[in-house]
Length: 229
Image 1: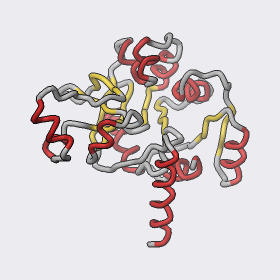
Image 2 (image 1 turned 45 degrees about the vertical axis):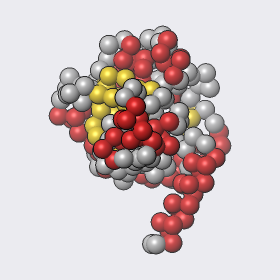
Image 3 (image 1 turned 30 degrees about the vertical axis):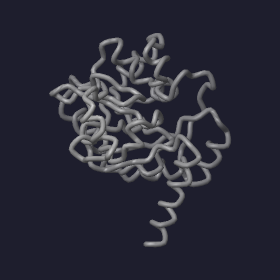
Image 4 (image 1 turned 180 degrees about the vertical axis):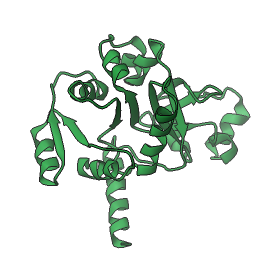
C-alpha cells in the first residue's frame, strides 16, 4: 500500500523529493525495493505529524507535504490543490483538502473525518462525528435518505497536510491538546493553539484505509484499474 501512495505523490507536480518516514524496517525494505527513499524515525511519536517533523528537521525544504500512508488512491491533483495556497500566500502555514461525501454511511462513520470551515475556507473544526449535526428532524431525515442537497453539508477531510517547515517544527514542540487526544485527530493541536488551517475543496475522492473492508475495497479498485489498462 505504501508503494502506491509513494507513486501517487511522485506524480504530483512541484514535488521535488519523496521520502517515506517510518519506524518499521519492513516498510523501509518495501520502499527501497521499488526504488524509493525511506527514513527511519523514532517509534515513540504521538502522531504522523511528529514523525514527519523528525525528518523535516534535517531538510532544507521550506514547504513539507505530508501524505498519510493509508491513502493509496489519493489523486496527484489533490496534492497539487493543497500546495496552491501555500505558494500564493505566505501567511498560510498549513493547508489541506476536503472531499465531497456522497454516502450517508460515511457521515456516521467515525473513520471518516469531517471538517467545517469559515467563509474564507479556514477550518473551524474537524471531527469523527457528523459535523455539522443537523438538529432539524426533516434535515436529518433527508441526510438519512441520501438526498444530495443535505449531504452537501458534509465534507470529508483528506489524509494530507502541507506545512511551512518552521510551523511544522513549532507545532511538534507543543503539547498534545485535549481535543486532539479525545478525537484522536492530530490537526486539532494546531487549531487549539491558534494556528489556522486552510482547507481547499476538491472533487476527487480518496479512500483512507482504516478497516479490513477499506483495504478490500481499495484492492478491488486497483484490480479493476489494472484490468482496464
